[in-house]
Image (tube, chains in turn yellow, green):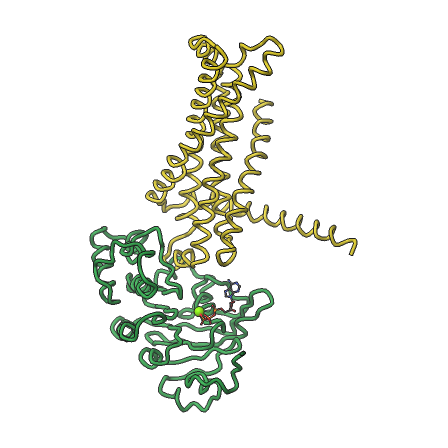
Length: 259
Length: 248
Ligand SMILES: Nc1ncnc2c1ncn2[C@@H]1O[C@H](COP(=O)(O)OP(=O)(O)OP(=O)(O)O)[C@@H](O)[C@H]1O
Ligand SMILES: [Mg+2]
């Protein structure tokens, strides 16, 4: 009786480890599938459209409001040291290195990991995945590879767009609300922002994009039976993708910090 | 020739197949009958490698299906799934021509479309449905599109999982005739699952009855009516009383 919570904890730890193992295997299978022909160009194009282009509004809105709020916060903090003039550069650095990729990645995770998991999960429970196999088409190549590649390529682009919009949000608040001179704000931003700030954020974006699509496909392909199975797969995909984004973000930041 | 020897499959504690032995000669039409949930669909999926049997061997022309090159092997197969399993992101004709639009059987788009429309006609669907999406069709129409897709690449071995379920009697007759034609004209080997006894008599050369995880009876369709097997008799005559318990 007393031991049952402990046993439960042990069981879920084992289940978690097993899942990590299966995801590692799925990751390896995906890489193997990327390297072997055929390559489904049409599916890749559709995935680029669905993952990249259609995520622009949500990523743009997120960045715009975040940039604005960031300007206010940095102003509030900076004014304690009489250092209000750091606002433009810190907004730019914060957006490019951290908030652009992380918040953009999370929004894409919410939008894309869920829809991939739900779509592939539905295909699985309605035997469409089985049908693909009987029609001599590898589901990994036909479904997973196009989505994973499209996300890996398009999320960095979304991050770049998000960075610019976020900096613009900071500019609007900085000049309109905090009394910065527009020309000085822009000059300050340009002078202090380094190429690496932007590049490191884009690398993060690529890793996040890869993880989002991989996790979405994994949970879809392993969906349980029925509507409940698909619902659970969708939820797990979003949660797992989000947690992985935070974990990968920390690891990458540590790596870039050391370099 | 398809040979199953002592095939077992369980899902967790639930034993579904418990030693199935079955031989389907090339160019024959085998019909599998049996109660709902006895594992008929699972049996077909085992042969296709979609479900991995726990034990036993499955041979196609003497070669083990689990060790053969899978793509090569599947290119000779066509399968109609019980739930049609149409790709809902593709139009009807693209579903039917799926195999003809990619891979080793790839051909020009116009030609693939023409073949698709011809196959749709054979299952009693007009060219007007070709550009619709599967979600816009009725259940019976989806089933027939699934059938057209299964036969589109003229496979040598075709599996039909309940081809006439959900069809009106006339359309069921058309489909029975089509399956018979495919076996006779194309010389294909067919395995059909059905609950419809009219269909069994129209399609089958041989009949096998799956019950309690094993083949309880198998033989030519002509011997079905006076087999003397109480299980088969109860099943084909649809009686509630008999050795097969109907839980109420
Ligand atoms: N993927 C699976 N996971 C767990 N159980 C399964 C799975 N597939 C089938 N089963 C179980 O195996 C049994 C046989 O299923 P199957 O679909 O083969 O039945 P069937 O004979 O085709 O029935 P019906 O005539 O109703 O289609 C069922 O009890 C089902 O619950
Ligand atoms: Mg079935």
